Each structure stands twice: as C-alpha cells, then as structure tokens.
Image: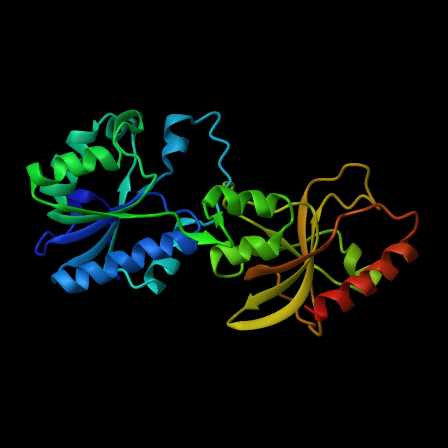
Amino acid sequence: MRIFKGIDQYDRSEEACLTTGTFDGVHVGHRKIIQMLNDIAEREGRRSVMLTFHPHPRKVLFPDDHGLELLTTMEEKLELLEAAGLDDVIIHPFSKEFSRFNAVEYVRDLLVNGLRMKHMVIGYDHHFGRNREGDIHQLREMAPLYDFNVTEISAEDIEDVHVSSTKVRTALQEGDVVTANMYLGYSYSFRGNVVRGKNRGKDLGFPTANIEISDDTKLIPKNGVYAVDVLLEGVAYRGMMNIGHNPTFEKRGERSVEVNLFDFDRDIYGLEVKVELLKYLRSEKRYSDVTGLKTQMEIDKHDAQGV
C-alpha cells in the first residue's frame, strides 16, 4: 500500500476508484466499503484509493472543545487499511482553509482534477464540503458533468443494529467489549510505553505494568477490570488490566492503566506494549483492606484465564 502526504503529492499516473472519510476504527461497515472499492477498482483496471485527513477535522475546527475520543491512531488506522487491501492512502492535511471548499469545488477540483477520480464509493450517510453540504444526491448530479460513476453502500448491519464508529465508542464507554469487538471485527486495542508506578501490585503478589498512552485523543474504555492479551516484542501474553483510580489506596487518585501479565517475570520498563481487550470482568471498587483486594484479584485472574 502506498501512502501519500497530501493530494498534491499523489501519483496521478493512473485513474482512481476513490472513497473518502475519517474511517475511525476501520470497523466492519468501513471494510464493506473498502471491499466494494477494491472489487470495482480491479474490475475497471484502476487504483483503489482512500482520501483521509490529519489532524481530525474537529481538532482544527474546534481546537479548544473538540472532545475527541478516537478508536484508532493514524498508525493503527494505516495498519488496518493495508490489511484491507487498499492500493493507496492519501493523508491530506486538514486546515480551516481546506474546510472552506464547497461541495462542487471539493469534487471537481480536488477529486476529479487532483486525483483523476473515475469512480467514487461512499457510505449512504457520507457528507462532504463546506458545512457538510454535499451528499449522495449532489454526487449523482455531478457525476455526468465531471465524468465519474458513483456507488453507494447501504448500512452494514449486525443483528439488525447499524454499525458506526459512534456505536463502537458507546459500547467501550459502557464496558461492553464483546459488542465493540463484534462491530470492529477485531479486538479493540491501544499501545503505550511501560512506565514506573507505585509498585503496589508487586506488594500484592500481582506485579503490574503501568501503561502510558501518548495519544491524548485515544479512547480509553470504562473504568474497571478487563481480560486482555498483551503483545510484547511479537509475543502475546494473557493478563488482566485495571483502568481507574485505585480507590482502595486513594480517595481520588489519577486515572491509570495497569496490566498484570500472567506467568511473566521480566523488567519491561520503557518498552512499548499493545493491549487487546477481550472482556470486561467487573467494575472498579474499594475494599476495606488489602486482604479483600488480593482475594478479588485471584478471582479476576481465574476469570481472565477462562476467557
């Protein structure tokens, strides 16, 4: 998969079948669009191309109040897009100036003239251009004028529930990891570096790796205890994770992410790990003494091993 840092950097030597959007999470609905795009591109002898944006438009348009909780970092999104079989991805810098293109200018000047788009594949609810004024109806009106075809993808359903990035976020915020993973088609994950904590887990007999997540827009799920797989240097380890404020020890400590890896004894400070969420086990709670907490952690370990 080729990656281009902007529309003006794109190799225009071949005509494009194109889709565009943020595609946060690259969930099962997104992948249906990508599969359709790939199939059309192969049939027509063109490149399958995605146009996406960085930074996220809301971060530019509402810098002080964007409220972003994204399912994927750009690095994670590119890995998922490559696995989906795209030929090219264009990551165009999003700016306030760019946001002022109206729907016609966006399609005519950027997609048709800038990228040699001959076929556009979009989801049924896609909007584009200034104030999101463009939609499927305008695309169909513009298609014969600017010599391209349009294919619309209807809603992707799982058990009669429309899949969207918003629904995935909501499931994770509610601790419903199983549903979120079903919508995504893979286990939700995040990456971070192992940093030093307060060593309370070690004193309890459950040494934990404190994970520092560098991307402040990455969604961290609901507080509580989870069964997880942890990928370290290409090897997967089963473990359990606590997200929260350690209420047994502090009235309101800072929110932390701590992982206990089973059958593991190594110093991994400073290393990057990938944590894949498998199941929400229980809510975080305060125990009256350390003995009660240790007993619960033994139960948590047993439950996590059984997932």
